[in-house]
Every structure is written in C-alpha cells, then in structure tokens.
Amino acid sequence: MKYKSISIRPFIGAKNYSESRKFYTELGFKELVIDTKMSLFRVNDNLAFYLQDYYKKDWIDNSMVLLEVEDILACEKDLKERNLHNKYKRVSLSPIKDSIHGREIFMHDPSGVLWHFYKFN
Image (cartoon, rainbow, N blue to C red; front, side):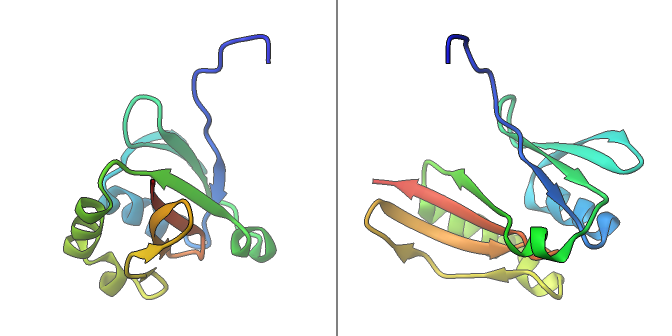
C-alpha cells in the first residue's frame, strides 16, 4: 500500500439485532448508532466494528473476529466476571488455550460469531 491506513472495521451480522447490541454493550464496547439497522461498536479510538441488523446463517457461522489483548489473564477474569456466557443462551466461553503463537480465549456471540481474544507470544 502506498498510503497510511488508519483503522480496520469489519462488518458482522446479528440474528437478533437488539440482543446483540445489548451483548456488545455489556461486553464493554461503546455503541454509536449509525441508523436503525447499523451501529458502530468501539473498544478504543482505533478498534471498532460495525454490527448490522442482517443475518445470513452461512455468513455468520463462518464469521470470526480476533481481538488482540495485552494480558490474557486479565481478559479471562473480565470475561468471566461479566458472566455473559450464562446470561445469553447462545454465548459460549472457553478456557484459555495455548497455541504455537500465543494464548487465546474463544467466545461465541449471541448470533454465533466466533471471537478470539488473543495474546501473541
């Protein structure tokens, strides 16, 4: 690329848009409503994604987002304390898993999008 990139923002869908908006707010993201069918969720100035009121099973079942974290133990503690995996029917949370490149926690959102909370070695 011959230009400076500022951020990257994936678009993900939601089976139940209002439930997913509530989930991401409870997860700690700040919501900026774009219109009735789309919101921007930020974790800081440059880390964000768009949530759409749109669901296509094949697309959602194959959607993954990796959020790199500084401290995987602090991330695990925070995710467990938020208790979202017990509040939402389809949300699941894995224990920390080790991989060649680091450590990660998997969490499915209410629609089935797979989140990787990852600490690289």
